[in-house]
Length: 448
Image (tube, rainbow, N blue to C red; front, side, top):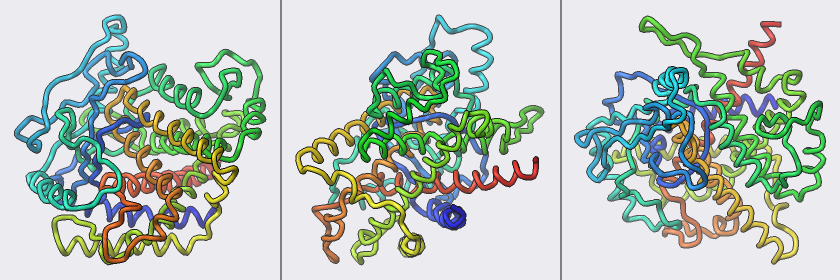
């Protein structure tokens, strides 16, 4: 465990630098998960090499229920950039809706704060806008394996991830719980007769410690247990981000962000969670190992001479690829603890059916992310979900990766720019979680 922590810290620093070069640019146009985050004031945003740009559609409607989330009450969604500040083809406009029934004074006051904390800073530098043209020209020349999302959608907008760090936004309550509940209850292969422990939306179970749930879970096949642990690990990682960057004080022109030990204990302390917190943290490490494994498997794809990580600057192209290869070399030195070959290894037809079911369940979770009522939470949820989806794609494409041609584009396996960016940023978020987890342990030790 401690070796994982040490490597996570080193990899995190490398990925942060890498993101400032090119990988912070995230393109996405379809749906994905989650809860929390906020703005960061920066006077350095005018420099192109200090921007982490994201192309994302935050207006996609929730496909499963009406958009009546907490932050629909007041102006809590992000206001798109004016036409003059965004690339051609991106449309601005106010698209917010209000819930008349929930428009009470107390809710308004609370959501005013959520609006401020959850708003996305979508400022773009002139250098960044000019770079889009070069990036698009380069991408058009690539032989993409997967069909890209519709980048020309009028609802898509560019935001700078460095100006919108993932942290507490005030998004909470029934709306946030409904998103997670839908993910767990409808997509983790679980019958409704089996209750998850500490689920506030489930009927009261008295002193039930959740052992019935875990007996059911252990009875599942390996693939379905893995699926649940991945989702639980993602949930845990996002909660750690919230606890580590919590709004501690606000007022008189001073905003203080930092670790909230009480909030961390509420979510992960063994006593307060009846032992559930320990399982959550184990699943976090499991997810980290899965995405670490994916990085080790995909290394040959980037090591080929034909692969050029295009940034718009030939000097930065070389620096970016060199740094990425350094990360891959570090990953290769780590003893892997999970072998994906044990998955979908049964009867050929049964394995194929299960794999497709696995894929469709995960795809459905990505659609649920469009139901997140906080724009900034939705942004980071989509990013991290697509990163995990890319990791799974890599793990189950080993044969195609092994047969990659050295000096020509591959027809069997290809990663789009948005998949690469999501993969690296998602792993960076997991590395941050493990780093912050180590910090919380030290703080708790000092407090005792």
